[in-house]
Image (tube, rainbow, N blue to C red; front, side, top):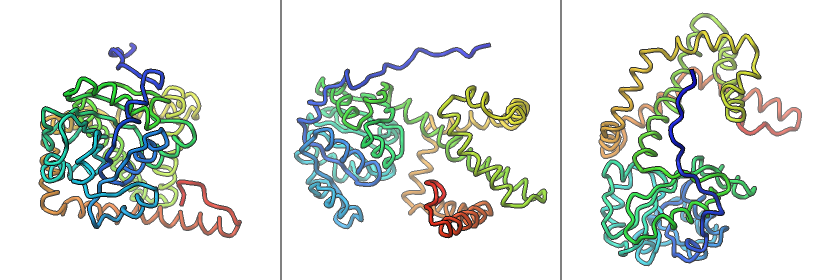
Length: 349
């Protein structure tokens, strides 16, 4: 039986977007990490001439922003005269940044743009009624978004309007997303809630949490059963990228048509055993925690305490056996590349 397909989201391309809207605005990029830098540079190369970067005085990215040719100010200074304020700092920092520097200084009729809906969806930021509030969320890691833009390509973006105080938020948001290069690929209209909740769920269940635990559990199962760690690493971790790249290019069905019959048939028999009813019940729990705000409450409580739980878990992750084996194999690869005089492929450095 074919799975039902819900109605598609509205989709926009460059032809549907007016770049002159954003190019005529003064844009303040708040934060200059991987997303902030990419947004600033792509906007600049798309014809936005009035861009300022708002940073703390001691920000380690200040010199990078200056070297890229941008005026750097305090956050309060950058926001004062801005028509568009793009908030590109980490989600946990939005609450205090909004309270202390953005809300007191952002002018009436300006637009707030977020790359992720978390802080608005869960009330960390409660925008004034006189502001446009827009989601412009490119689906990719900052440096890769930049690389594709320079190559003349783009990534998909999720776009939404949470608040339209001026009547022009929709057109402005599309213009901003197109200036990032996303109109070359596709700008899909959704809501802050849909983007944020599905993003958190996807990160926790598949992209980060689920994948990391599945790989490590399978790796350790082989090691504990007596298989060489190096062999286990190749079979549970190294080849994962090869398979997911093929899935990305061809779709799951297309990928399965190109792998061995052994791998394909084993996948049909075993996949539902690994992701069975207990896994689906856990997914229900995760989605409920995301929707209720319970996860964000935990996140912010840890952040307010100085992130002790996050940092302890990060340290423990780096001490897993699979990490040591991966470092050893990467060293072997680097040694081989040095001996042959070649550079290691990207992803094996």
